[in-house]
Image (cartoon, rainbow, N blue to C red; front, side, top):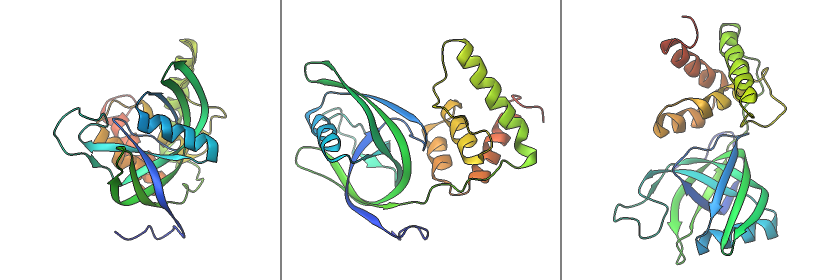
Length: 212
């Protein structure tokens, strides 16, 4: 695999946390950690002040012994920075992370303890671009959705809200939309934030959320 054209460097042995979900840059990730390999991972990341790679499972389970289906990982993930770690009970940690930078991996390998690692190439952050004028209704719809969530007890999104940033708006919509993991993965991996938002806009119009 070739490294992304915009990426000047790589991480040689990025520890990976396979998930049945897709993490987006700027999104919060809540984890309940109890397996020894991931307890060790969290401890090391805390000690070294380093992120780990959150990556979606294409096939299989992240739980050891959960089945015979081989584990396949997606090729693009997002770095997860530890924000808060609490001991839920003996041997269990509640972890809150923040998605930061996207990356691509090459030939992931599983260590003896079951932890996945891979060489990762970092992908440049989305360019900060104002949403195209035709996409403004989708921006307004997100603001309305966040307002409704706040009235019900709170928004899942971190402030400040960046409604003037096409990539931020697209990513927050992708967290909310009831679409497949494969679709979320493809949207997250898109390098053009305007295209990502345009695809979200097409989905919302197709579902009647926004007037066509």
